[in-house]
Length: 271
Ligand SMILES: [Zn+2]
Image (cartoon, rainbow, N blue to C red):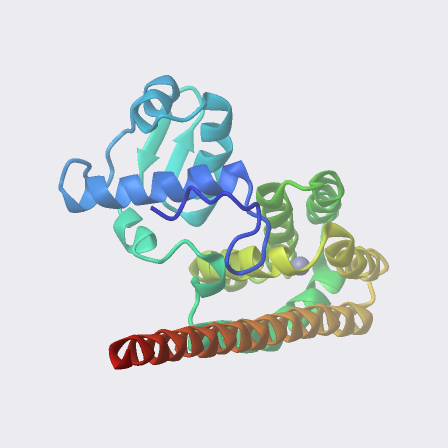
């Protein structure tokens, strides 16, 4: 199985840590249990202690992995109650875990295109209509981001919180609904981009947007949001190109070694 990699660097060049490994392990096990009918969507999961023992992992590494599954939409954690497998968990789990492939080219491009059409306009509306509560939420998301350090789950959650707060602050109730609809796609997109940049990079974009909203400057808020999303789009395009050329290189290298082996076996047969 693939999750026991010796090198801290995965195939796609990003640093895999224990949390990613446990998350992959959990996803594989959940997929298996669901397909065998041993776990039904909507089921309450066993307590953490039991889960950790079942999966053969430490509780301390199980917890962050469960958090990832929660933001992916696989499970819901209820405080003081436990974790539940979501009704549509199997469709989420059907998606491969390698984050770079969580979204295919088309949907990623379409999402980016739609975000670029919508979010600058929503940021402008937020600059006109945000109330104290919205501003507090936006500030909170920035504080969370600053404290996320190497915690990618926290980084992605705070990025998502910032954008959700802008949807809400736009004062358009339909925008809030829309956010729920594209929430998971946005989450996936952020999972990808969070691997490509550090938190400082995201902060550099979020902070000025917050200031523009606080200063009630719709034009500036809109322009800065366009910059932020254009940057994200370019990052994704660039990483996709790198990934394609890496695959091509691997493919060619594999072809060469096959050729070498082929020539060797011909040489041997001629002896
Ligand atoms: Zn952002």
